[in-house]
Image (cartoon, rainbow, N blue to C red; front, side, top):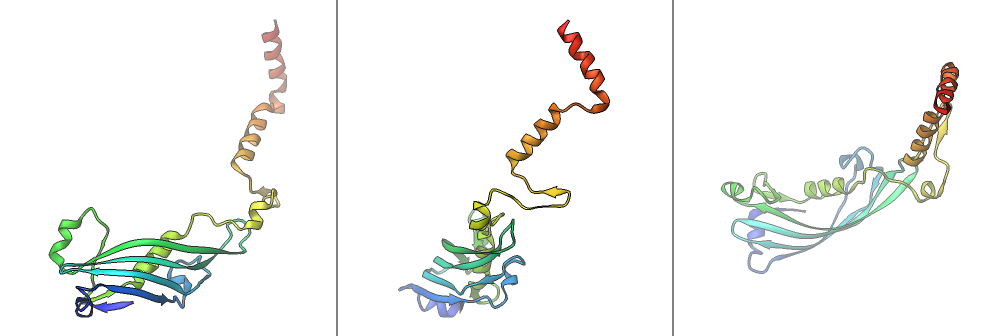
Length: 180
C-alpha cells in the first residue's frame, strides 16, 4: 500500500480504485494487548489532485483482544469507513489546520501506518466476552472481589448504616435524646 507521487499522478484524471489486503505479522505493532489481527481488507478509491491525494477507504477485518474480566480471547470485528488526505506540497499544510491531514515522508505515500493508527483507535477501553457478560458473579479472590458500581454503592450505604461498636453506647444516648 505504497505509492510514489509520480505513480499517483498517472491516475489524476481517472482516479485510483483500491482493493488490497494488509497484513500485520506482529500484532503488537498495533498495540501490546492485541493478540492477533486477521488480514485487513482495504477497499475504496483515491482522488488525486495537483496538491493533494484523498483516499476514501472501507477497512474490514478482525482483531483478537483479551477479555477485561476473564482474559479469554474476544474477536472484535472491524468495519470502518474513513477519508484520509495527504498533501503533496509542504506550503499547503498551513491552510488545512482544522482538517486531519497526513504528511508525506519523502516522495512516497504509505497507507499502512494510517491503517495501523485507525485500528488502534478502534480498540475499546474494555473488551468483555459474551460469557463474562452473562455471568452474574464477578471474579473474586482472597480478601478481594470485583463489583459493579451499583454493588459498590450498596456496600457503602450498609457501612454508613452500621454503627462503630466503640460508639454504640453514644448512639443509644443520642437516640434517647431524640426521643425525649
